[in-house]
Image (cartoon, rainbow, N blue to C red; front, top):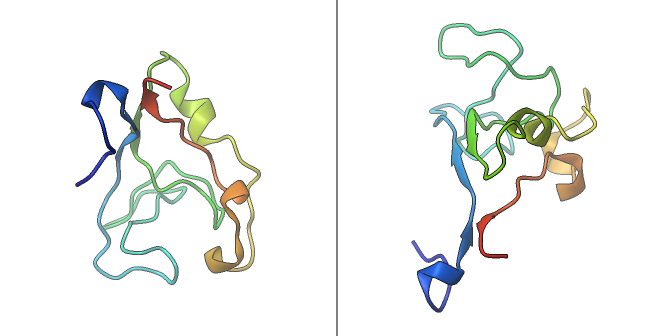
Length: 98
């Protein structure tokens, strides 16, 4: 794993917890969906949208910002995840020296 050149004190990173999917849906690249309702082999607590986050936990420097960070996007209910741009997803800020 390579974080960057120079001193580690100058690196930025994002720390997130996700779940590996053995049978992924198209475009997801083996990260398990976080769906609205939990079921066997399905994580609950997400949104019913194709651009909902697949992040289960996120390390952020500011207390109380996790929920707003992970829900900071306009939900899209139809189409394919392959047709979306980076702007269609929640943005997770790096932590470290910026």
